[in-house]
Length: 343
Image 1: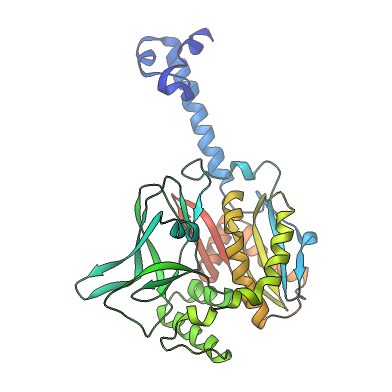
Image 2 (image 1 turned 180 degrees about the vertical axis):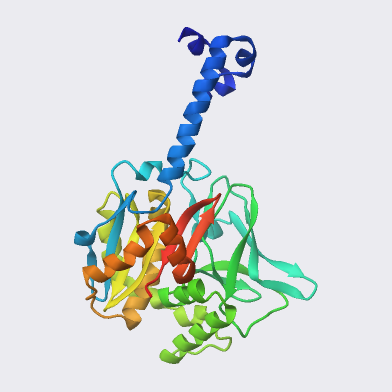
């Protein structure tokens, strides 16, 4: 035991050994074997904990939050599990894209080619010392066309990456792009089209449908114009649910969203922190739909349970279902954001 204690020093201290000691000490070799075993167990534990299934989660059917045409059922980590599920790349609290753009900590650029820019990809550079979380469904006003983010991604400090997007303004294509700025988040109906149809033409068709149902006009058929000024209309919903959320311990994996007799979606995240910083966007997306086309919730518990069983029963069933009914957002080989829709 004393030999192991002597070798705990230097930059390898956290692993329980150091390079020089490994070469010269039998006790340190024993320590190395012990340390390697601990490392294997650690990563094995994280691998198990990183799954979003009934083994790690419980659905709180009896703790639903309901206001007017929207009901939210929390999905919580079981005792002690939430703290183990994955880790963000840095120890500091990450910024959402909206904050990073306001503080000029991140730069979004179209990828230029000889004949113009790529419609479905943007280059992202993080100039800050913090992780920046780009959330699926965020709307970006600017560039040569407005875009909607198609994936959730963590952009690490000082790095450049690429993010998949869809155009949400089909009649504008300017030679000189505008600077991108945040324009809120798409409603859940448009996001469902994006995640399940996965075609630019389907996204434009859904925007056309929503314009037809509204009284708003737009020369460029821009979703930004369609969604403009909805924040004031949604304020009572947002105030109620944000108030309920502020009274909790925030140890949530995500939520199930319901309106009328319809399951709108479930969204789950790999850590309570990701759920926390994403909650406002996630809520806004579903509030927009519930307020405009929803009805007082009357979905049965059995219907919700059947839906969630397809997602949480096992990893294999989850992957099969979500592949055609939503999206698994992957980062560093782990699911960080799961979005699933009912049949």
